[in-house]
Length: 261
Image (tube, rainbow, N blue to C red):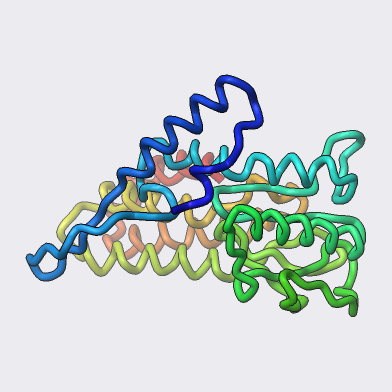
């Protein structure tokens, strides 16, 4: 049975009630496999949380809350003033940050010990090391005896971060997704919708892919001219293909859309 069910409460009566509820909730999870219209035998789920369950994010947060506390109280990791920012959690993605390799190894050791205690398996093949503010060092860091490789590029939450002297994000993947989305829309709708509707579809589905991650980038690092060119070229592609008459009719509409960039 999952060790989560037997974790001792650390917050008094409320934690005790939560633990009792978790035991009753998670000890009655069952599943079966549906394949080609055939339903397989029902089997119990002995570990993990219910996929797409309403309570799953909350239960997982309770599961890793003590890990965050141990990392914060360790004295290692990055700080902004007195604020600890040495770890960032997003679901099951963990980002550890430290100003030194020694401190980062201490954070990794804490995660390793916590994982052994509470049955959490960290995938070393999907874990990477990289440096912001300088070149990657030659130090060797490990987790559960497995060494990590230093990378020049790391994907985190859909954004490719580059190891460099400053904070940089690679835009090539974003551009590819933007153009792929536009081409998919063009291939599906073809001439079945008018140009105004096509422009609306492009703005709704393509623009978020083009601007994804811009919020975390310094304004001076964003090439506004390049983004404008990419955005305007797709509009011109649609309107010029539709003819001069439609181009004149949509001129005001295009001007208003410029405000989004």
